[in-house]
Length: 370
Ligand SMILES: Nc1ncnc2c1ncn2[C@@H]1O[C@H](COP(=O)(O)OP(=O)(O)O)[C@@H](O)[C@H]1O
Ligand SMILES: N[C@@H](CCC(=O)OP(=O)(O)O)C(=O)O
Image (tube, rainbow, N blue to C red; front, side, top):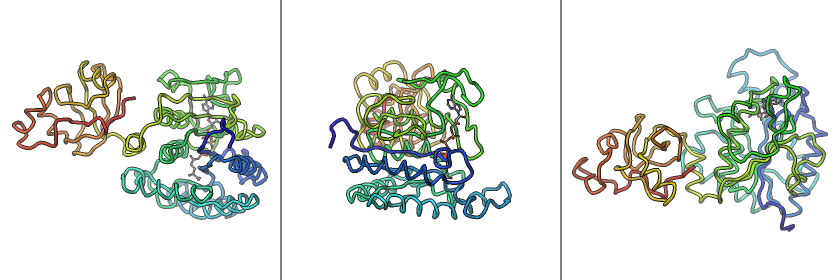
């Protein structure tokens, strides 16, 4: 294998790319994208495809019916369209002697560590057999509460799950612009991003089309998660000739988001990909320093305040005294217990609570510093 090629890449194709802006799947464009992925696969790159387009494919297959704008209509279209979509991918990859394996996920599959590990094993088994995993959200059954909600974020979670080196988000724009280029013809392409902050987020609008979900805003959320896990992200146009191969070969196309630090280990990737935080701990400056500079566990004596109502095992956001987010971790104590432990020495936990789950409120193995 060419040593400059990434080993494992997640390619996310938005509805905008698969339909080329029309109301139907553009099969001739899809075959061109498959040709590029097959060539990379041949060169030894493991490809994981995150595909949108089920709802668009469902509408097309049913002849564009007039339906109520309801969840049930979308779920019905997704149920019809997903089977069409996977058939198209299977047929197109077959042209290059490759098979696909479908994985339909919901948020709930990623939040539960055991289900997360099962999904990871399935993905690995497919890759081991040189089968292309094709992932989409399980739209036909997922209700809003258990949805990831958009395939940009889903693809970032898939990249963490698969421990990919790169995530390629292909869309209908050349990359992230200083403003939505649909409404701002003077907007400038931003070629590289090292850090996603509020000023950058303010540039990213929603989807300009009726078929896309989330627009650039969800692409930034996805990039943020992946970068923090040490995964490089590129957002660029799916229409550019040879785009997947060219990006994988290191050509500067679109917007490149630089990975922050080294790849995280499996449990820490799950802390980023798994359940969203359901509480916050505000730390004092000493605790912030201990976590950020020395890689220490979080002790009760460094916690100034606790917010939220949560049980032991919950994922929490950690902030500095000013409220800036510094990390995320899994708590060994519930919120009522932590409220009683604020500022306490670890050796006093047992006498204060009458029991102890150990000296650390969050052990360093359960902690990701951002
Ligand atoms: N700052 C920005 N730079 C580029 N595109 C932007 C920006 N803000 C909003 N967008 C919109 O995001 C859209 C792409 O997202 P979306 O419609 O969800 O496509 P996809 O189906 O590829 O996910 C673009 O067509 C564009 O109108
Ligand atoms: N899961 C949905 C797509 C959701 C989504 O994020 O769409 P897009 O913004 O086009 O990537 C579908 O298959 O229709």
